[in-house]
Length: 532
Image 1 (cartoon, rainbow, N blue to C red):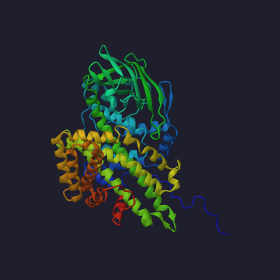
Image 2: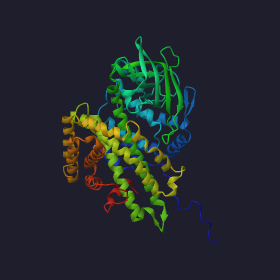
Image 3: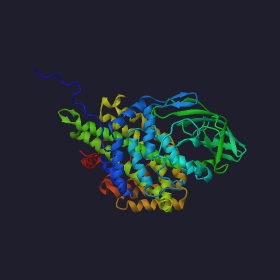
Image 4: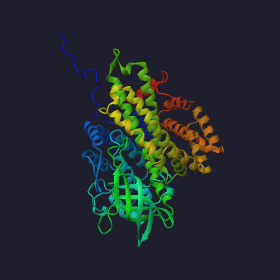
């Protein structure tokens, strides 16, 4: 008699125990092209550590057991604390800063971004306080005396989740609170009031959305006598009593579920000013620029995670007597996905190089300012549709919560919404482009980087024309998407020129586009995506 059929026959083995760096040729080449090749062995060690089965299981547990609010304390699953400890031990929250809070310099941004990109392929919720802590140092530069006090705690490669004053802890995390019920993105309409109280301020009001409420300190926008101002608000007052932050509820979010996001009331909360009164937006935008960069890196990581699972599934799943990976239509879909994924990692790593070089190179500084909103716009808005298409590669298996693709799909929209949604990014790009001399320098640099790509030249001419038209605001999304696409092509020119040529040809065409429409040239994209 024939042996009974194995009930789990024709299912791929778990995707686990992989080197997230060595298995990713586009990442390796982007890191090398942007000056961090000396880090390759350390990055491979990081990739092996984060690619272990244990890490993927912890990510599932952290998502399945969201935080709970108990009075003034938020309780997290142990898996969340483990991820915080792992990321802080690796310096994802501080490696781009020297001990005095000055930038470390090249290639710190690129090397950190490679690690952040790999961590994003595993668990994203805990990365919210990681990125805010890293970015807060930029805002604190407006108050050097305060920055000097907190830097030893920020720079510690340790995680201290205890609920006590930050000065008593071995390490600290920082969050931020900007949006309110009546204004959202329009923070100039904020109603939270801050009044002087000796050398400090007392704050009363609310924040409608304040993530990572167990951070030790928050950078908060409030109306001071001199106008909208940035403040440093700790969880404890100087006398050791709990500060006047009263968390009302935790948001029940679609994704990003391992991370807590809260609504909070301030009642005579103690705070210190960061920067001058009336310059709150100018102060905190230094932080927001870095959180936006991390949103793009994270979304690129989500794309890579989804692509890896889709390719892995297709290599093992047999349908109609052939592996899915050997079927022309499936190969076309996977190749098309691989093209966008490679472009995403190339453009975010090149953007990180601009941040690395900005202190010494005015053109790179202008490039960082102008391209950050465009790259965030394109990468973060590409991710949801990308993850869906990867999920479809798994069929019904991908749609159930037992599989990681369902979690990735719930997670995918968040980075496009947080830290400035699509319209906000497009408008920020227009504001940056309003500095005509800087904008001209950036467009000229992109033109030089893509001089062998005629489609890019046509797109750059169109961008220049649309920016000069009276109705530029109505076309701002089109400009942002086109500019990011050209920037991605420029980045690919330094890593894989043959891929750059195909990318601009396939992505700068008019009209909507669905995955899977590439011709036979897609084989090149797929071979680069993951080694057999």
